[in-house]
Length: 330
Image (cartoon, rainbow, N blue to C red; front, top):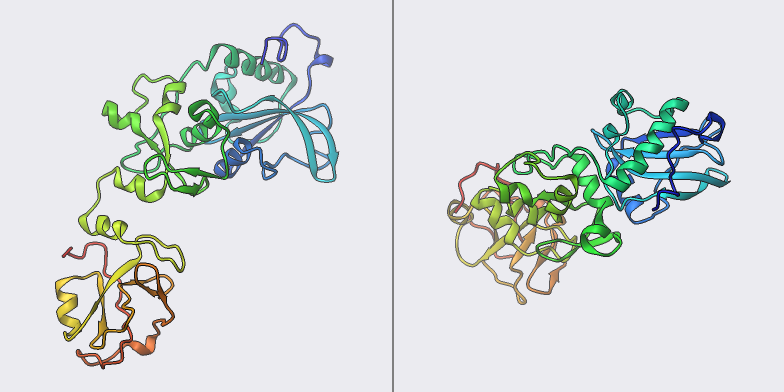
């Protein structure tokens, strides 16, 4: 983008300044992914009272407000608009830095007064050329989720961080599995490195580069957790439903259910008779029993609950209720 693309509008007559519609989307995750992947899921305001051909739409996401896109409305096809990007998601821009008093529009959508439309377009151009004036509060990643503003910024700035455009599925930054970007979590690695839960003097560009997109399991592993939850995460993924952290080990042989449960709270007892091939794991989500690469067809039903401690030699499994999170680990 050059200075000529978004020239200073302060000295232009009012009739030359395009109408500007502020589109502050509440669904920041879906919108940020749609804009970063250039997906048709990016929704522009529609209807007779919305922007028309020649108008400018400024899409803002998050709590404090991240400018995700500035688009010039073109032709329409029913409810679908064709727009030209005046500004894409490659550079971070903060709404509050647009002009004095911009905070009064936080969380709202609608037409901006002509004098503020000028200031917004000038503010976009100034921040794109010189960078944002301020930074954002990233949130306490260790105690909860990273702030939506920073998460959206990382998604929108994916190309600047990685060198390629965002795809619908991206590699987790640690385990390198491909995960739907809607399910990935933002981890502020800079907060861990600097030992702070604030921006810590980092610029917005530094903050974005300090944030990594991880799958849920890897994100949990980077923060404090119990031995029991760690063991659950390390267990195999169910090949039937794909659930992770929901499998329990099956114990077979001549023993009693109470003995097994007292020794290890996160196992199930299969019975006296050991089938061949022998399932090693039971999924509490879809009730599949499976070994390394084989899923047994037997499913658990409420009828499997028995009153006696010693189970009959049928080889069927028994449903074991999940223990509370504070249950002692084996």
